[in-house]
Length: 249
Image (cartoon, rainbow, N blue to C red):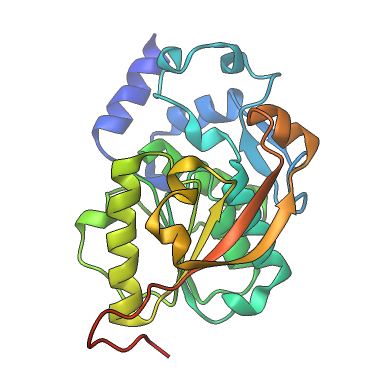
């Protein structure tokens, strides 16, 4: 109980990434497993929730730090990370925002691929700590983490925005679509979306304005953990020009 209370105090302070309470870090290290297998990116090591972890068998509401979604390597993120590692020229020398970063794998892939600046964004401060721990595992300097809702903030001119598995809620999908379109139109930002075919993406207007760049067959462990999903794809979102507005070149 004392440890859970320490976790709660750290979260209420709103601290992000490596600034979280040391006891929170110790708790995460004790209740996740370091693994690099069973995903599309075996070269990236991550701290994840696995069947050998205590809280794998507990309902999300019993996890002392809230739903540990950041301890799952989601299939959309796997596809994005694989794509960046295989095509480093997409981000080399460029500024990259990893929106809804979760475990931080795509931010790590961008850093490995030579991005000049990487920012991970996730509203959960625990995800910020997960990103920091995973950077350490891969011998990288910590990626800065913003733990505020970036959709509510003034937009920065990013070269590339990447987001995986974010189209899981209709209202969120609509908000993301508007924000991403503004990025594209105002700054010429390239928007790459990783998605395994969720209904909220495949039926959304964003999908109709996106081109599939790559599709990957998911490894068997990922299929089993995601209700039998078999593949995941990377999409290049390019909104159609609005009347009287030329698309960025």
